[in-house]
Length: 474
Image (cartoon, rainbow, N blue to C red; front, top):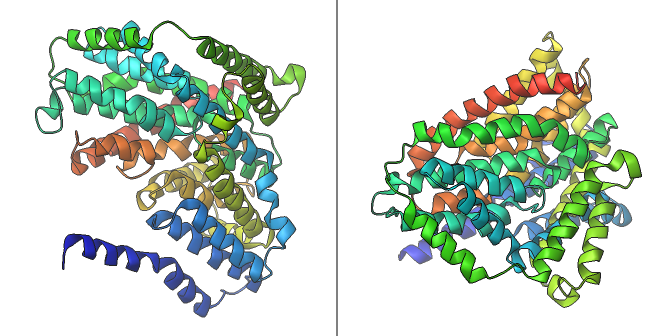
């Protein structure tokens, strides 16, 4: 049997896992004190999550199958099943994806990255800071951390590494491994810092509204994440110098190459200038919501309309952004499934079960334990989105029964939702791309990832808690 046919048979076998596990759970029946409808919804939900994890089918296909089964079994009425696709949370991400496509189409994202490298890249550590700066600028504007890290910055990092004489086969440790690790982990920090830093972040915001009835919107998210996030970015290039010491000498080849690439881009185009003006206006409106009262999605919609009216791009070009429409389907569907799981009582039952197991813990100790469980459970997930959908709402329900500030609970889970991606080489799209460039072995990535997790926990628990105390979260 050839390797290709063996891989195909293995893929066929994996595609049956969701069905097999769903049938096993179905025949086992619901546990005591759990309603049958809630259990059936759980079986559909967990089968969908498993399908997302094994990635045999596209995300949207897996979600639509789960949604269809829930409708056919009368667990969710059709009109209610479609509500997730019209939710403002879903459309915030869709619109942000469309705007991100314009940033990439106009070349603005690439120009920003190259300008940061030209400005800061006077040493190998300076190149690390340039990657962090690029992520920080693009983080609030490009909601797909895969598009931002894997589509814009990772190709530049690979090109930089090779220009320094470091490639996967020859001297990867001299520069390439260092730069790839900085780029990958900087991507996760900026994904954590902003509501629009990662596509699934709004799922946390929506769960916070459902469980705690608080609005953890763009401004609140950014306010809580800005100080620990900046501290994390500031120390990351230095940390990586110890975890993966580069040995390269002069980086002049990089500076020459970057200048050449900037020269090839030419002067700033009107479309780039118009995009920058719109993006800055959006950020200002998000930050000043308390003054004008416009919601995050409303501001994003205004930005998209401005892009079309000013003809930065055409509607025909805009609708070609298949990632935005793909996100509409999987995010809207997941939102519906997660809401149904809560409405039918499964989340509250599970929360009560977990609460009994942690009875007697002080509120802050309980949050600390839940946060660690949430963070390190990422080892068994291959997607940040699936991790959030599976666990964030349940943790909120458990924490809602104790005397803790909801903003503190939501903040910890919100930021850890992206930071936990540091642990493995398969946690999220950009990590897979950075690792796939071949500069690090799996054992090296896992070892450094574990040490980076300690770095994140130290900063976000110590610096974060002090900052959250200062802004009144607890």
